[in-house]
Length: 45
Image (cartoon, rainbow, N blue to C red; front, side):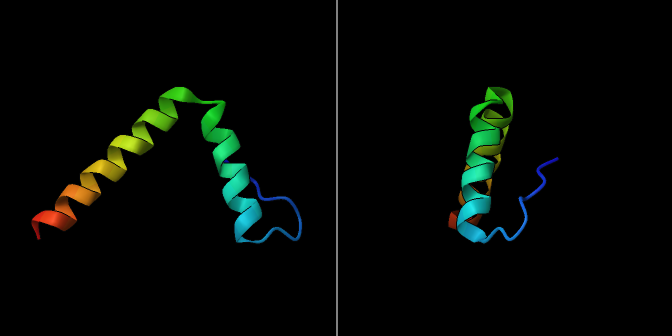
């Protein structure tokens, strides 16, 4: 679970998320596939 550092804003949170994903290739792949699915559903709608 990602715990934001104190006083973090959206930009910091985004950077921390990217670091977590970069250190976790299987998670990055899963997230990428999820996003692709959502995009396809939006385009089909």
